[in-house]
Image (cartoon, rainbow, N blue to C red; front, side):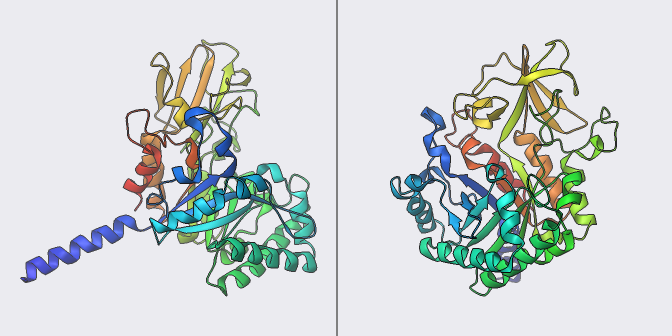
Length: 384
């Protein structure tokens, strides 16, 4: 083989390796198996070649430190756990991780367990036992949030202690430790010793989304990449992806451990005045529920892309995100264009990869004309 052919072969191999570099961490939400019609999502609907890690969400925690199975029927009757593990037959490099917590779990139990050495030790052992039972490759802690929602001020230090004990036990067995953390700067200041958190994690999944939603009485995109000129207060200017990621970096987090959080859904509003749809326009509640997610104010990308063409599409040049409107219904979401821009931002900051919440609201069936998993494929196409 000539030197030129050798060089071309080496270059080609390097480009393939470079293209696949970076984490694509995908949350699998167990309850989606109960959704109707084309929204029903099971473990066997997962494409195992589009994710480097799949996080099984969620198990819970008891106050004695033991693992609480939130839906035993989903594990035993529907056999979803074994179906999830079978994905490794298609992709032997895939890592499947147990995730504990979530918004509905609250903070109180985690605060109580983290404050006591005995209950921390019980939690570590219970996690190891559960991982061993099902064959997980690691553990993800989604405590929302230390020092908040029933937590205490001492949570900030105790969270780092708990992570250190988990990481020591998990890494000793070749297992991964990750955590989902807030991307809101005000929340981060309350909850995290960022250098300590970074030191004691293998991956940091920063949830730079849900900055706005129907929990407020005005219009705001759930995950703008950048601030708008209509953001006038200091806090408003921080409620965006770029500011949240930059805060973690400025406070000392290892960029290679950070995965930028991306959504495959949107948040919507019912406008008080259909003729006023600008940011901070008044609303009287969430948008109408979608047919699959069935929750007012929240809608999956797979539901959005199926909507009739009479919705008006608007691209916000400042925030670098889209929204659509039909009458008094306003939906802010991420599409392939905004996801590409967010991935390019992550690349520019030398981040470790992306985290996706969640697999079930991408257009996983490919019903909207761009093939299955258009959001997830965009992430893979542009990451690094």
